Length: 169
Image (cartoon, rainbow, N blue to C red; front, side, top):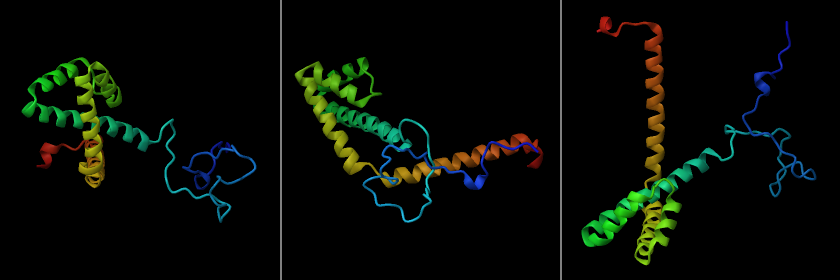
């Protein structure tokens, strides 16, 4: 029998590989030395430059800018139609995909636009800290993943089992 290059499943780890940045300390400074010799990791290691949480935070950051622009534009539409038109014209020329770049460009457009940008920055901060329902986000995301997984598995089983749905009814 040919020897496999892979270690047995019991020896596999989902933790990131350890680095020997500081050879003087075998444990990460300033943390205390681990009590056991074996490091236990209960989270999956996701390879990449940024953690999934950091990527999600970047997307949420840009989303909060989008929400703030929607809120400010709705406010302007009712009490300052001229500023609303200026914002809409600016939106037609600049993308909202990068919230910081959008606000930086808006600030540099003119002094009137600078005030709009400052208002957007204020609203996005307030919305993020006070109005966004973080618990609801987690609940909805978990439900979407579960529902999607069930649907995909069901569709796959139906597709591969060659069951005629019409004859079942």
